Every structure is written in structure tokens, then in C-alpha cells.
Image (cartoon, rainbow, N blue to C red; front, side, top):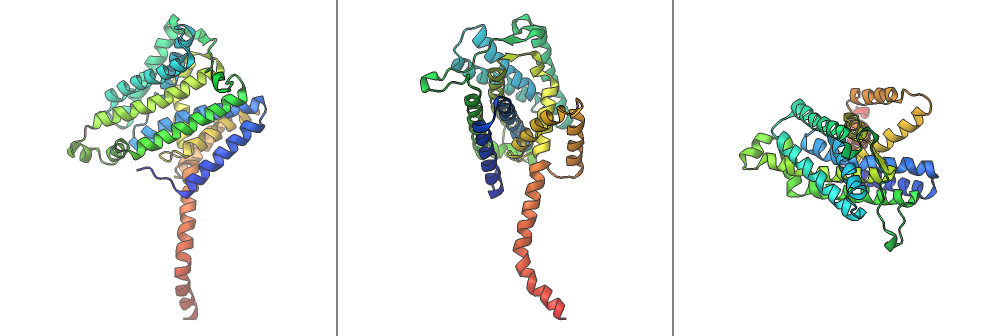
Length: 333
């Protein structure tokens, strides 16, 4: 079961404080980067829920994010729905699509599960790319943001929209924690550790996987709808396997199965992308080298490495005083 530790609480508090500080003090370009980090963080914690706690490494979460973005865009631009209704519908549509994918892929494992989800993502990308209704290669523009002026909130302001995305990330994180601590989440963790035993206990394994994958898809759909509102334009590239691959890289970079780590990874990835790309167009090479170093170090990402060092230091502090008399006795001898 997922548990918070003082280090995780402290990291979350630090990240929230930094995000709030940047949201208040940053210029337009800084706010755009902050919003990009927050939306990516929503996507990667959704991916970490299924990959880190269920062993379902997905390469279609970028496509699910794209489904949410296109559903929101179509419902607002072409169907004429109000943005709040379109947002709710987009999240529901994405969750339903994710549940179907999870149900179909639930009986596969490892590389077969990865390739099956990749196939679903590529099918979605090809369909959107070749269908005129979705704008084809030209994409869709003129996407409206949520109208919260009745509450005195103008989301067309970049600073306000960044704060709104921060609130959405906080809500998504709390929802995932609630899911992981529920009976459904504990069943998912049990399946990851010993699927045969959980099946022998009478658990419907495929249903648990499908349900969690569907919930994860809903959060990915939220990220997609926010991405559509952020750029006010979307293209089929949002469903590309590259987006799913980058999301998985971010999860591994931050720390798989930590939930906090992917948020750290999202911040590191976006900042690296913008800072290094200003110096060279080969910024992917730099990120790749860092990822290789993280994997070769056998640390569970950036946050996993920090947690390991933190735990080791605490253990040293606990055992240090107890070992002191033994060391003194040895010295006297």
C-alpha cells in the first residue's frame, strides 16, 4: 500500500512552495514553462499509478492524453458544448477508452503488455491523423478555456491558468493516493507482486487491472483537456508514441512507484528541455545520457536515490549510538 513518509511530505511541500512562488513572480515565459510542467506531472502520475503500483508499463498514455485533448476540442469547437460539460465529458470518454484498453491487455504481461498498449496508441494516432473531422495534420484551433468569471477567476490570464493547473495536479495526486489506499489499490499491488495468488483467492484480476487503467485514463484525459486549453490548439502529434515514451522516461527519471518522483522528474525533464535546447538542438542526447546514468546507478530515479540516501542516513543515526560502546571496548582491548 502506498504510504507517505516525512521525506515525501517534505518534498511535496517544497515543490508546492516553489510552484506557488513561480506562479506569483514569473514572467509570461516562466508561466508557460510552469504550466507545461504541471500538465506533464498530471500525466506522469497517472502513468505511475498503473506502471509503478500495478506493473502495467503503458505506452499509450500519451495517446490517452491526446484523446482527452481532442474530445474536449471537438465538444467545444464543433459540438458547441460549454467548456465545463466538455471537460467532464472528455475525462469520461478517455476513462472509458482506457478501461477498454486495460480490459483487452489485462491478460498480457511484460513486453507483450507494452507492445499491445503501443499498438492501441498508434491506432489512435493514425485514425486522428487521417480523419478530416479531427482536422487531420492541421489539427484544431480556437479552443476555449473554462469560463470561471462567475467566481471572479479569469483563466485567460496565464498566471491564473497556471494556478488552476496546480490545483488540478493537487486534486489528481490526492485522487490517486485515495485509489492506491483503497481496496482496489491494495488488490492492484497484490496482483503486481503475486498475480497467481490473488487469482487463487478469488479476485477477478482482469477487472481490477481494467478498473485502475480506466481511472488512470481519466486523469490522463484531464491532462489532455488542460493541454488543449493551454495551447488553444492541438495536433495529432499529441497522440504520437513519442509523447508516451517521454512520459515513461519522466517516470523512470523521477522514480517509478514513488508517485512523488514523477513530479520531480517532470520538473527536471521540462527544465532540461528548455535550458539545453537553448544551447543545442541535441537536447534529447543530454536527457538520454542522464537517463542512462540513472539506470546504471541502480537507483530508482532521482527521488528514489534521495530516498535511499535518506533511509541509510537515518539507519546510521539509529545504530550509531548503540555501536559506540562496542567501538570503545574494542579500542580499550
